[in-house]
Image (cartoon, rainbow, N blue to C red; front, side):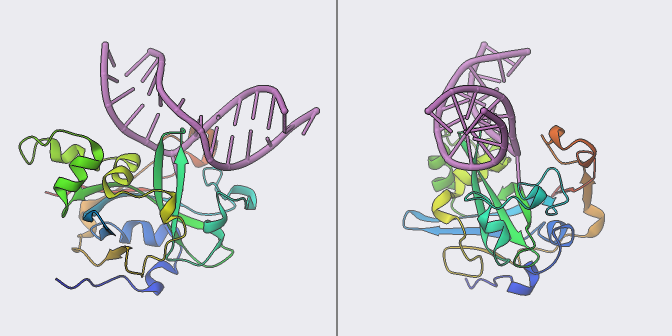
Amino acid sequence: MTFHRLPLDFYARPALEVAPDLLGKLLVHVTPEGTASGYITETEAYVGPEDKAAHSYGGRKTDRTRAMFGPPGRAYVYLIYGLHHCFNVVVAAEDQPEAVLVRSLKPKDGLELMFARRRLKQQRPGNNICRLTDGPGKLCQALGITKQQYGCDLTGEQLFITSGISVPAENISAQPRINIDYAKEWAHLPWRFVWQPD
DNA sequence: CATATGATTATG
DNA sequence: ATAATCATATGT
């Protein structure tokens, strides 16, 4: 099986364009333990210095957010609540700190490995399997994404995104972003994109 | 140096 | 409804 990685110019666009386009694409992580992957089913756009919900709000450039200010097509990974990792795709352009948070996947390959990493008992497929990667922290745990992947080139060999399957626009809905109440007037904007597979 | 907080998850 | 759990950001 040959992978068709998304080219750099896919990422070199505004977060609000990339976020919905990422739905149906396949996120793949190749590690010594094996390969795990899943189709992207939910994303959120964070649009840069203006966006109160974004880590790059006000142009905050710190050790954590550095990757957001770098070139597009790289991974921005951070630890949240001292417990969970979140995976973002850096988009737009260098010094234009926009990113797309990947919130949920539909598991594809490496189910056994993902169950092991998640420390869930593998029950009947189709039952527990839907809980494997249905959250930003869960998908990082299942794919083995940590800050080791910080800044990782997504057109490279380890952690990458491929064309996956195409999603009809009518199967995509836009809703408010989750858990960003602190962002006040930016909190209700419909910048969360959801694909509900059949 | 001190403190508050979170782009979450699992469990009751 | 709430505990878990700590890197990061910010203030002194």
